[in-house]
Structure formats: structure tokens, C-alpha cells
Image (cartoon, rainbow, N blue to C red; front, side):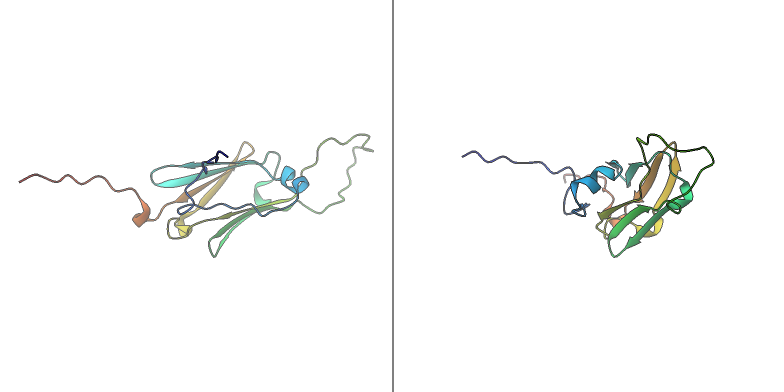
Length: 139
């Protein structure tokens, strides 16, 4: 039998993500996320069009970054009339990411929301930054 080696998208010892193991139906409602590593930070982009900026809740607690969105009160009525067909609905969501807090500087995390994309910058701590190679002279 041949073993298949699956490459993990991120180093597990530096930046660990986990899914919160919800049902497939709930997972389908969660917004998609792109994560990019740069020399000095990680960039996280969460696709969430049509949302209001002030209804996002972003919290970092004990190594877990939690991004959630809670819409305004359900059951809002509109003066537009009776809905005959509804094909989309913006639902609440929560995404959680396990971070290595020895690598991420949690005090410097910042977020912006523009054009339907929530962008977070997760700066690395000074000791986690890559070091330039040191030149050693031969005597």
C-alpha cells in the first residue's frame, strides 16, 4: 500500500488554525478566508459582502482569534411589501483561529472592512521575524 503525504498549508508549529467542527450546513454559511504570510506579519482576508462594519466582533483571547458577525434583530419588517421569493440571506457567523501567541503580537492586530472584505493584519513579534544571514569571515 502506498502512503500519501498531504502537505499542510501552514506550518503547524508556528501558526495553527482549527475549524470548530460544525455541521456541513453551518460550514457552508461561514465566509471564505485567505491567509497570507509575509516577512513581518500574516494577512487574513475574510469575504463578507453586504455586512455593516460595526456589527463585526473581533476578539483575541488565550491564543484564539475569534471573528463573528451578529446581524441586527431578526424579524425586521419592511415597507416594500410581501417577499415572494428569497434566494439570499445574510446569516450570522463565527470563525475561530488558533494562533501561536509567541509568534503573533496580539497587541498590534488591526482590522479594516472595505468592499465586502474584512482584512486583518497580524504582526509577528520581534523574536519571530526572520533574521538576515550573518556573514562569517574566514581567517
